[in-house]
Length: 127
Image (tube, rainbow, N blue to C red; front, side, top):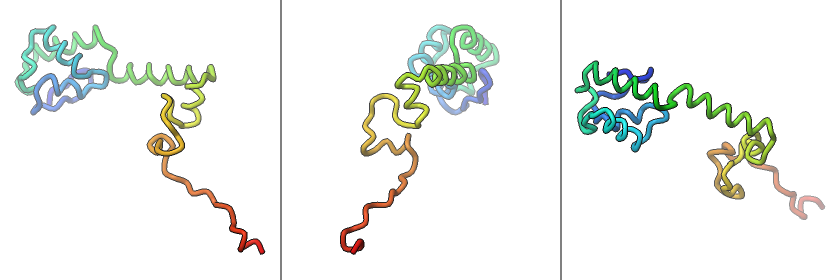
């Protein structure tokens, strides 16, 4: 498996798809990298030689923010929003959807599993 920027990319996939296994590189960026370096994006990753891998790694490190640095930057942005107590920061703090989605129904991936709340007792049980 070729290793680029600390990530093992799968060797049986085409180059532009294999590059997407690096956090921060999507389809457009992967294809752009291949074009900028003169690599054939349809070649398998295992067919890349050491010199091509080195050029690819240098290009990524010099032009893009990827992996750990990108994750750290994202976390810093979220913590800044929490510190200034803006609306988005409060939504992050409470674990609710941040971008205006509805919460009356759905939102389970953000709110977690459903917690049942005890309902009202019926009139018959009170007598």
